[in-house]
Image (cartoon, rainbow, N blue to C red; front, side, top):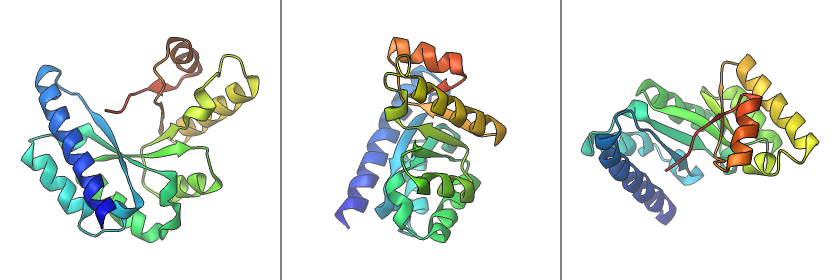
Length: 173
């Protein structure tokens, strides 16, 4: 139970801060990871929507990231929650994409809009041809599947390299 409350505390804190920042920069969005403990609770969608309403933050400016650790939950449970979020206008991405075989399976079965390529693949991408090839493959897959490819990297060399490869870079709050 404590992990669910912690996850909601993080969600509330992120949305509170984002709502203040959005006053300065309209259209500002945030990415927040969802834990398996949150996804397995039926009240998670309702609680998240209540937080959005409390801070008057648009659902369309929230991106929830489903982590690789959620793979142990029944896919039907995750799909129900993800679908409810999507219907409310909240965006969903797969976090840590590429780190395990289940991330590809989950991504294929869930109504996600993007894949966040794990930092392991982006780090030192300029020096490692294998990483470049793999990231290009991930980007090509995302583009062919009408998904958004995302990375959390903001370092200048990596930013330039992945932008050149066609990866849109977005940062989480």
